[in-house]
Amino acid sequence: MSQKPDLYEVLGVERTAGEADIKKAFMRITMTCHPDSAPYKKLNDAQKAEADVKFAYGKEAQTVLLDPLKRAAYDKFGHAGLESMANGQTPQQSWSDAMGPVRKRTRTNEEVFDFFDRAAERNGTAPKAETKTGDGPEMSEEDMRRAAAEARRRNRGQNQPDIGSSAYVTPKPEPKQEPKPAPKPDVKPTPAAQKPVEKPAAKPTTIFEDVAEKVSEAAGRLRGAASDDVTLPAEVLEKFRDNLQDFIGEVDNAIRQSRRSGPKGGYNR
Image (tube, rainbow, N blue to C red; front, side):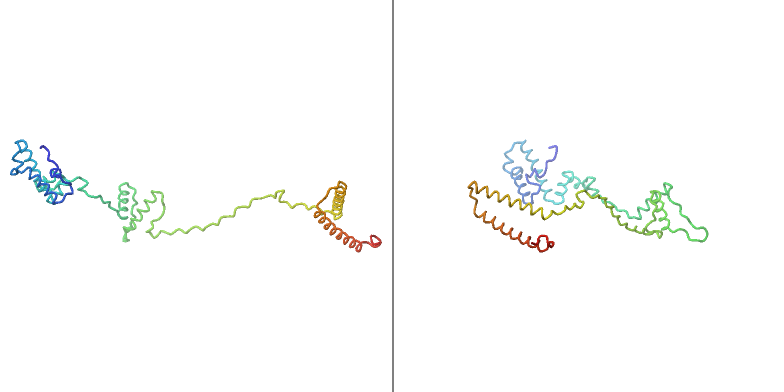
């Protein structure tokens, strides 16, 4: 065979097979492919050569799969891992396996400031540190860093002092302006909203005249029904009579009141 077969396929077991399953599988190969077994002696030369190869791979498979280190190397790298172990070398790994997980490095604020300061110096935009001549103290490193930070802000159009500097002043909040009330719309009164014109009350005499006409009309209908021999409901006529009597009584009272309060020599007879 030009290429070595898979050791699990040689034994005919799963990749998760245990020690007992591996030994049983190799025992089956030994019973048919070992030179001292009865089935082997009955084979011809070509079959014996094939059985020898199968027995050799079965023996190698049992040796490798029963060794935890060799089995782990074979499961990960195949036959190349076994050859590397035989030569005393570490099996070759892929670049990602060798490097492992990539870890991102977080830079501190100090490192970030140093990076921009060096970039400003290379570009020629870094502010020159003002030093005092004579015996006076020079500008401290912290003052130089603040000056560089302010220069960077000026370059970006932000003329605000550094928070860490003593020149920083907390801006006062602007006073809240109360919203002005919206002007009320000029609503003109509609004609319907105007006060209705009160009509003068009807004179009492007009009401009595209307009632007198209705009573006269009702009397005419009663005479017409009597002449035509039409019988009207008694309860209706009785109710009409009662109301008419009440009305006559109130009219008599009004007449007496009018005579007492009327002018002398007028209605009092």
